[in-house]
Length: 319
DNA sequence: CCCACTGAGTCCGATTTAAT
DNA sequence: ATTAAATCGGACTCAGTGGG
Image 1 (cartoon, rainbow, N blue to C red):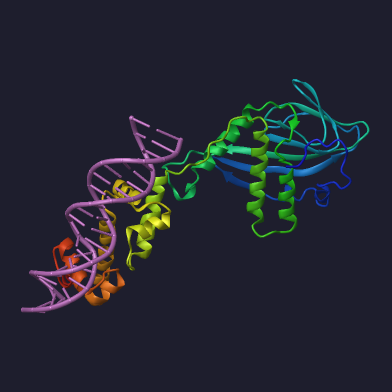
Image 2: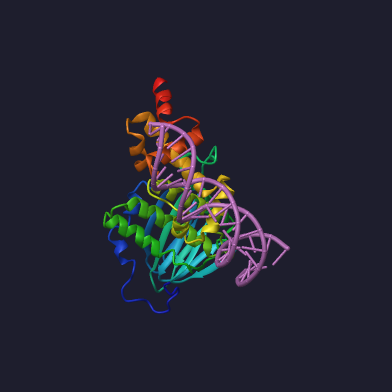
């Protein structure tokens, strides 16, 4: 974390490189989806004001994030005037009147992010391909937007160093880095989040796993990946770093069968597929699908399906 | 108290073998 | 390829422990 609000100006200005092409990011048509919102970046740049420069009262229909990376000045809001100095941040929401004056002696720099935030229609259905795994992003975006709406315009310290992300975005553009759009998108989101966080006290919740459901998923995946070789309950349990007894219970809970029967059923379904689609012998199928011998496969097959493997193949071929 | 887990002992069924 | 009989390992049950 960088110290915010340094009293002495650093000799080298961290954001100086952004002055090389001040409107670089403004020229990009940046729009993307975040959770249930469409984010359109209208402006994202570093601007410098000479000493005593006045931006007269104005307002926007959008959100404007103001960060002061260097210099000082004053902002006038409805609630009164507030001093600005290096490391500070304020947000002017839609229709918030503001006027800004840079210090009489020093020039002032401002990192400005101006975004249009459009609520998009709610998703239909819980798992469309477009929002796969997106639930937590939606929740976080919602929380961030709620926070931004409720936030006072009064300046505070940029405690979470949102400013840094302007540089990240700029550098991604400047270096034409691979995946630059994704980096810039992330930078913009980080600026929104870190701005919102300044007034946020609640601990956010993170997605927690249902460990047993997760273990069940891992176990069955492992079984399906390795069913062709001899598998024991213990081997799978060791793979998951749990006791074999515990795995038994988990399989019982989620599949309502034992480890052995799960494994056996899976092996048999694979054998059935091979019987239908190949001409391999029972012995070959046994070796291929995890049965110790042809005779044993035969025994198990008939026990479960009521017909011998050869008979089953015949039935399938007739269809 | 409930839940996750362990260990001992039992018994089932997976597997082999041998025969058809 | 199929079946029956024999064998053996390990899955399962149950009782008990420890942790939150």
